[in-house]
Length: 226
Image 1 (cartoon, rainbow, N blue to C red):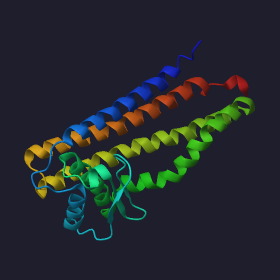
Image 2 (image 1 turned 120 degrees about the vertical axis):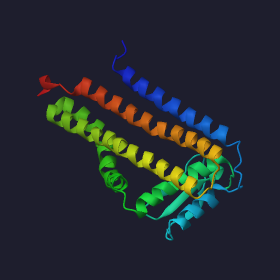
Image 3 (image 1 turned 90 degrees about the vertical axis):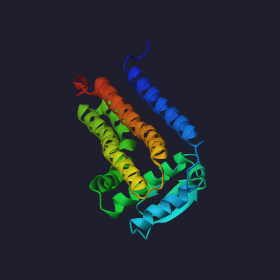
Image 4 (image 1 turned 90 degrees about the horizontal axis):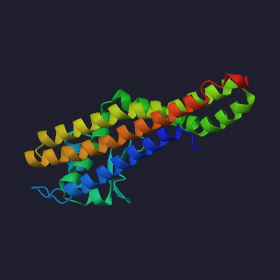
């Protein structure tokens, strides 16, 4: 008989998959619309950074599809091929979003710094969680609890990521409007792309929360092992 709590994992996987499909379809839809000013994702990123007087960030293309990211450690703004060289509304929206992270870094946005500080903790916690829980089944409940707490750091990271991503999108749309990079109609399209992207982070956070809940239900009250 299948463990009924496994449904929580399936729900999480379904949400994450649905969000991923939605963002890909949304990007493809608005990727068909070319900007009035024929500006590429790379052009938009450099323009935004220049207007913000950010001189130490390098904009560069990377391989992959929607692999765009900003790396605060080496000050690189990495744009995927479908964004860097495209003049579509979707590409400019994504590039502006990554610039939003550069703006956060430039202005010392606390949630961004908090997320960065959590990375080494989360890496350790995610790797130790399951081994500690399994070992705790034989050694004692305290070790199981420590394992669950380790996994909880993953959810904490996902939770901190949400305001970071939402704020980056708000900054992006504000800059695109202020600098008139996009027309009003194009701005609405870019907003749809960024909303779809934001939903992937919400889905990821919910999926991790459901996994954490499953661990608590399965192992959180294993007192008879002590």
